[in-house]
Image 1 (cartoon, rainbow, N blue to C red):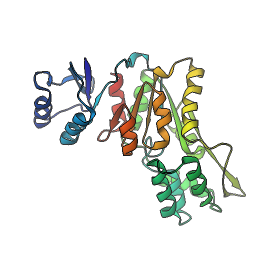
Image 2 (tube, rainbow, N blue to C red):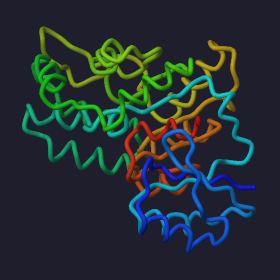
Image 3 (cartoon, rainbow, N blue to C red):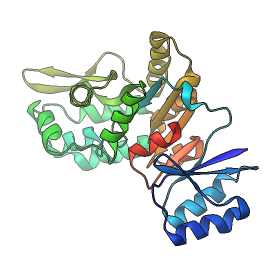
Image 4 (cartoon, one colour):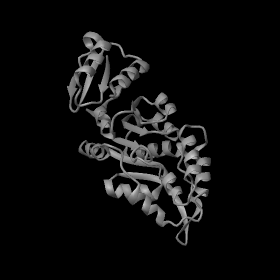
Length: 279
């Protein structure tokens, strides 16, 4: 049997008809918590599922075989363009008038066209001389959580599931989000400062794709759990190694290369739709 999750708490008549037309006698969705599910004898292809999702503008996903929601003990998430709506480094760059250059490098790195570590080194170098007060302005004036973020994190706490935020961005933001949201674990890059200005370098090893995957395993050891008890979510190519280690990988409004490799995708829903997998 295959379980199809329909990430909506209310389906209209036309949406139901599209689903029933696709799945015939098995196509009547059943309400579970705040979403719908369908049990099918044979799983449809990802392409067929995406076609229905795009037609009704509601996310549909197949639960991976063997996935056990009751065993999940950790969710690990990317920060920029996943938990939050911005790429922090792009917004920082705006304060030193190099946002177009930095954004172009960021976009290419997220598509997987550039080595992440090298791309971050290039981008941070462009920030040389910027007053560190700009970081607080980005946090206060430009950083917003993506829809459903607070409900998502609250729901995980209700289920006693730990939350880890890992980022190829910077500790300035992850630490503040940890305090604001009550997150269990965070890891990110440390920007080097001198006399109140950025030096254009980071301190220590860069948190790239491999470091994110290693952080997942480090947390598994700390919590005495297995990767099969982890959900990983991200949007960029540098999240894929981490996502591939988890029992369930979720591409959130992600680049095509990430959606192609993730077990599930969310393109229309907010972050609280992650809770549907745990229903």
